[in-house]
Length: 325
Ligand code: NAP
Ligand code: GDD
Image (cartoon, rainbow, N blue to C red; front, side):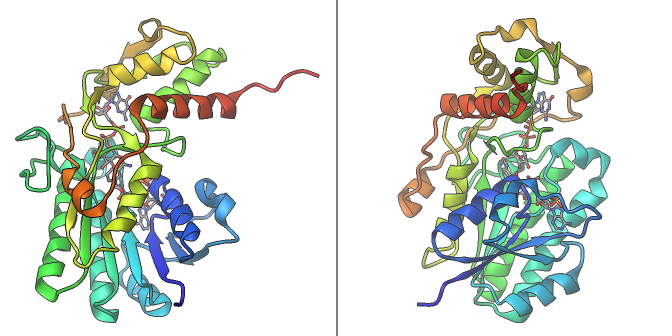
C-alpha cells in the first residue's frame, strides 16, 4: 500500500514538531505548511528538515490553502495552526478570530472543494470549557469560554462539527487539555517556570515573576497527545474526544516541584506580579478522557512529576554555562 500523506498546519509549533516525528515513524509522507517570514528560523523542526516537505501558506489566505490541498492531495490534514497564546487574544482579538476561528473554515472549505474524503483534524481546546459548569469536563460539558481565544476555539469546534454534519466530511475535533514539553513556547507558564528555575540555578536571574499561582490545569505531555490526534483519524467514523490526564495541579504545585528538582524552595524566588494576571481567568480544568480510553485505546504515559522533571532538566542542559578548560 502506498504511504499516506499528511498535511500539517502549524508544523513549526510545539505539537506540529511532535506530530511530524510521530507520522514519519509510521511511514507517512509529511508536508508542513509554514507562513512567510523574513527570517527562516524553525528551531523545533530543524532536525526534521531532510525528512519533511515544507510548503508556504497562510490560514488568512483562502487561495493559498485551497491551492496547497489541491496540489498535495493529502489523506489527512491536521489543523494545528492558531494564535494560541491566551493573553495575546485580549490584545489582538480580531486577529485571533481570523486565525483561530475563521482559519478553520478556510481549511475545511479547501477540503470541501478539493476532495471531501480527506480526513480533517481540528485542534480544539479545554479553554472552551472556561468557567467550568461541571467537573471533570467531558465531550458533553457545555462551553463557557473566558477569553477571545476560547471564544474563537468554540467557533472552530462547532464549524468542524457542522461540516461533518452538513457535508458528511470526516472532520474530528480533539478537545485537548494543556500539554507541555521542553519545546513549549517560553511565554506559557510551565516553560516560563522551567526556564526560570534553570536561570535562577545558574545565577542568571534573581526572581521569577508570575501571575495567578492558584489556577489549576490538567497538564500532560505533548508527545503523548499527538498520538491521540492520529488515533482520532484512524477510526471508522469521525467524532470528538477529550484528551487529558484526569489529574489537576495548581501553578503553585508546578513551581514547588520544579524548584525542588534543583534543591530550591520556590517561596524564596517566585513573586506574584499583577501584570501577568488575566482580565478573566480559567480557574480550574480537569478532563475526563474515558471516551478516548474506551474508543481510541489512548492513555497518557507520562506522569506530571516526570513532565516537570523532564522540562527542568532540558532547560538546565540548554542553559548550562560552558566549563573552563
Ligand atoms: P504553538 O506552539 O503556538 O504553534 C502554533 C502554530 O501555528 C505555529 O506553527 C505558528 O506558526 C502557526 N500559525 C499561527 N498563525 C498562523 C497563520 N496565520 N498561518 C499559518 N500558520 C500559523 O501551539 P501548540 O502548543 O503547538 O498548539 C497547537 C494547536 O493546538 C493550536 O491550535 C493550539 O491552539 C491548540 N491547543 C494547544 C494546547 C496546548 O496545551 N499546547 C491545548 C489545546 C489546544 P509560526 O511559527 O509562524 O508562529
Ligand atoms: N502564561 C502565563 N504566565 N500564565 C500564568 C502566569 C504567567 O506568568 N502566572 C500564572 N499563570 C496561569 C494563567 O493565568 C493560567 O491560569 C495558567 O497559568 C496557564 O497559563 P498558560 O500556560 O499560558 O496556558 P493556558 O491554560 O492559558 O492556555 C494553554 O492551554 C490551552 C488548553 O487549555 C494554551 O496552550 C492554549 O493554546 C490551549 O488551548
